[in-house]
Image (cartoon, rainbow over all chains, first blue to last red; front, side, top):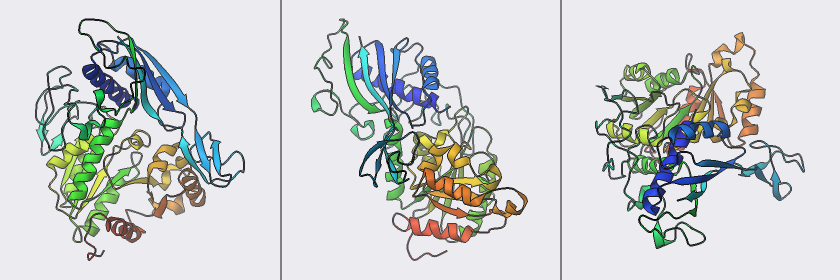
Length: 113
Length: 309
């Protein structure tokens, strides 16, 4: 359940920003999650609800934006969509695809008071 | 980042701990062992506060120095006592604090010429037996120390110490992985000779530890042949992150149905650059190749070249 650690880290970042930017309440949190990453969105939502209780982010809407998996196929010489890490290229069928997107775990944006 | 005790420690060792909310319970100390990582060795109480002037481990800057794009210009304008709705564009890695602690660990290890490996596997793959055997075989060639991660007990550290090598046990309590902040604390307590080997035995778990950089030189995943050949496909994150796969317990191959060719193929599909060695911690089969791998990879960063296994 590493989502609990990730939720704690997310709250830490938000509280740091709250102190430095001077906001006291967070209304909305936008997080970019890679589709091929290691985070289960519903688990993160559950954990964040738990850890944010009593904090400036309590009750904030957690907007989880999924970033689709993409990879660079050296055979095709271009970026192709992938559904798994190191998937085969859907265009040429070769396996030499390096993941270039889909592993994100980023705090993108906060809507604050 | 310690996501359990929440304290911060600067790279010069200065505690950044602040006030008393989110206080952990008291701690019992036994031979350098953390009873729970929610409990801090300094007995101080603290929360997730830190000094924003500390750019080195903070990883970003604030205000007018341009490190963060706040977009439309509303951000940063704060009038005390007035509510002001605004949107802050941050684009920050959520694990950036862990990564900063990992970077500090890595720099510290490199400065001491210590070669660190982060061992990952499911429970029961034979990590500790592998370490005991490795230490027994190599301890007269290199100084070796171990950081052990488990939810409970100091059993593994006790087994390591029986070989004569120093070991620090980290008990993560309910935590399912080691993080870089925990390892930094363990490094504070571990007597390590320069130019040595450090093994970090992570919590037995094929999922969570993959996400947390500890500052190691390489991640090594251990898979025992009794676990089945399709583990690399079932738990791809772990195998994607590792530089070396040790297929352990190969002495049991005559007694089980394990498709070695398929397992190697699955591992390479998930991670084309992964190196794979077959070993048996019990019989010692394949271990010389592992020792050569250590020596070859350690040469760049740590161990003196004239030493040979």
